[in-house]
Image 1 (tube, rainbow, N blue to C red):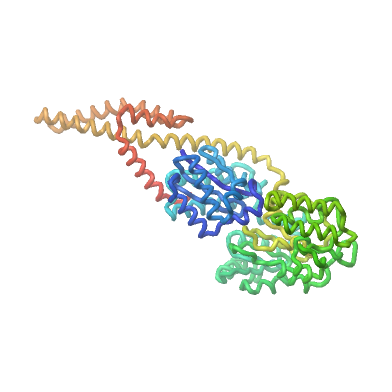
Image 2 (cartoon, rainbow, N blue to C red; image 1 turned 60 degrees about the horizontal axis):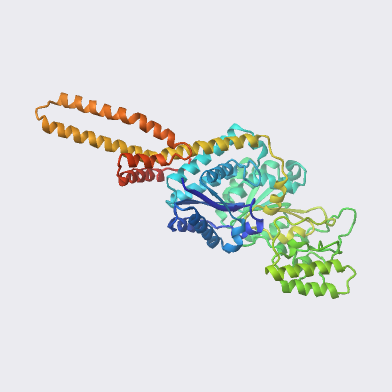
Length: 562
């Protein structure tokens, strides 16, 4: 087996990198095609979800395969190889099988135990089969992964630990309140009509929302989803065109977005405009909203929301009270900025006659500028340290962004009156989620299945050699019977048949024990050498063995996903 997987996921990379590396459907197809066209790979499949991008291939050289697959991932994702490499992981042979089986069981998901990954694996296999890039190895691997995932869900209670990203996201939006209590009576807007958006709409319908509006670029799909929802509750759902979204936002209480768009679907300015007609916000403990603005919101957003903008600030930073260290913004807010910008801002902080300016703040910014001058930019933190949040009003608009790359501008995180949950915040929340007791049982299932798959694959590897050996033996028997007929031309059919059957039985008995035993030995780790031994001992024609393998691979390519 020469199975290789190169990829990145929410466990290895920050969401900002995953977002930039996200592959469109066309890019996935081109990636698979280019992989099998490359020299080290003979089979390929790509598994791309909202929190992982993985390229599977059957390669004949490990180091060349890693280099080629990494390069192809970088080229098709548009992220430079030097930048992408620190976040990539590599699994080979049994470790690659273990990884995919764990993924199929939901053990490697952002929400442990979620079952949506099985549909995504099935789609990945179907795509590779349609493109004729899945041969015997990947067909067997992905179909077995589907069976292992189904077994884990049927034989254990992993479902009690797992839930869909939709359910988990709604729980985060509700802020600890039961989703059904929180959602009851609310008006929902769902943007997109794909599998994730459809699941979100169905979940909201079960939770008791009063109305669901479906917006999608393809009107037919939005109307079809609305019809399905109305079958359960007449008048619950209606479809609208995408250009109606800004108006619908002014009436919606909760919005879920999951589209395949490559750019933002909801800009911060659009959200701020939707909030402007909702009346004054309710701030805890006070009748007025403080004048602090969102550090990561643009000036236009702050102005449209009636928030203050600090004049003459080179980076358009808001007027906020200073705190210890550099927590005015936090390093995450300046990640990626160049040294010149930071130095300019440091000088402004140092010279501006502001009572909130402190030497600590200026020194911290200067230190960041020095780091940027050395590294070229401020490095992104995978999990920036949390800073103290000021008092915020009760949300009037709840936003759930399940798209990758994101649909909703992250700047609205700090917009008063909005609660935004996206893939990044879900990743933070899921890191602290408790693990179910059944997870250990699923891990045992995965380990057992990996061992069984490896044994079956190693045993199958020797099958063409055994078939070639028996074919050679049959040819020898046929040749000897023909020679006997030449020596005994008067032999009748009955005697010829008896002699032929006797010789065949002798050959079968001689070959039975060795071929059964060699299959058993080949199934054990390190058993691949037995096929070579058989070919050498019996002087088998390599082309005969290869022909058997090609015939089996041709049959495998015609098989569909489980």
